[in-house]
Image (cartoon, rainbow, N blue to C red):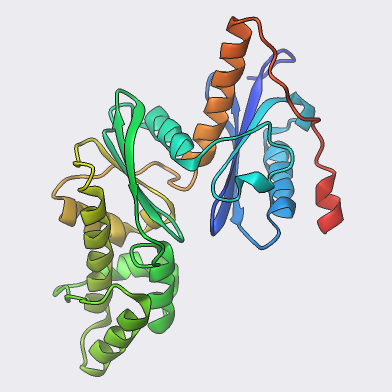
Length: 286
């Protein structure tokens, strides 16, 4: 329940493929959340998704005490009071949901990263190279090659009775290998299961450089794919935890960091500089 004196915070995560916004209250409760595709005009989308999140929370923008932007497009959020790296924000958001997390693996549209967390703090990380292998983009390419919907890959892979070994993790060569397997008469579900296993194997090998310890949390858009969750567990030989909305951990962490900044400033008698609470720029891009 909100009051006139309540404080509210917003986090916006501009990722390579999706932009996410979370509006949270002083107690950390999520009041609204919005996920939209990241287009070429980051500034326009940032304004639009924030407008939608505020409408869902039934709040005017001037009631938001602090806004933090994160993600690779964070510099393109004109109304953000501060920009914070995605690693820091993801860690904060994950820990708020899973306090006992020790290893977090995030698989997004264009990259994958492993986070080492100890006592609720990020202590180390590792990221994949710029190759699309081991990312959501890799799955999109394969789905297109198989004339399947991306959302259908996970459930289809669970029907496999003989997971095929896919040797190529480069998108170009993987497409050729998939086509070859199809021409050989292999079952499509076995091919898809093999693709999931190949991605999971690559990501787990990357994360093993950190020293994987439970609890293990899987986030990012790929975590919504039940087949990838199963493949990650098979390769990790351990159960993984998945947030209710695995896309939102960065935006949630950004909102919670905003709350922390305001609380620390108040405790020390300081006032944080904030930007004027306006979303007028959105009109210039519509």
